[in-house]
Length: 190
Image 1 (cartoon, rainbow, N blue to C red):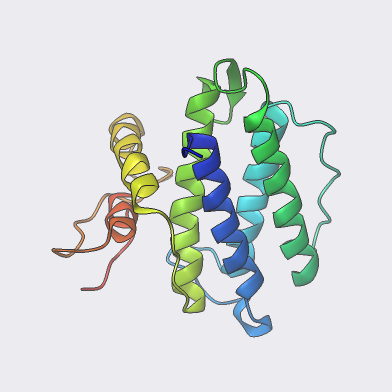
Image 2 (cartoon, one colour):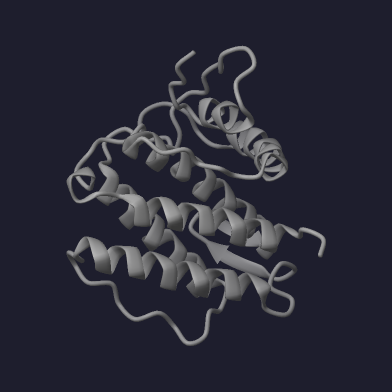
């Protein structure tokens, strides 16, 4: 079966879910490369984004409210549940063609999909770095979203309060995922 942007996103989300499930009890408070967030805050951010995008994409039924301070096991479960709802919403008839109100403004569903794919790739990289694991994403998906990220970076404001740190240069020969992380402001070791 050929890979589509939605099936590629489902694979990315599944990889991140495995990383979330690999978090050890003492790692939930570990810092991440995403400045100011520990592992728990990073995972909560991903869940919040999944829930928000599932809602704008018309997920049915709507997801129940998230507990204020979920236990790690509950957070791992809600990650899977909200991810599955989001994937299903992107698979809906006409989902990628219609215009939706995303947190960044009105965008086609296909752009919302790229935003969430990019979000999961870079935060999956952040999570993997924080817990000492590897994020094994498909390089073709990473390369496609790197092209999207370049265009996005040209449109977003820079400086204090910007959604991304200034782009950095990845070391020569760095893997595709490390190059994407550097593009989005992450420091990459040689």
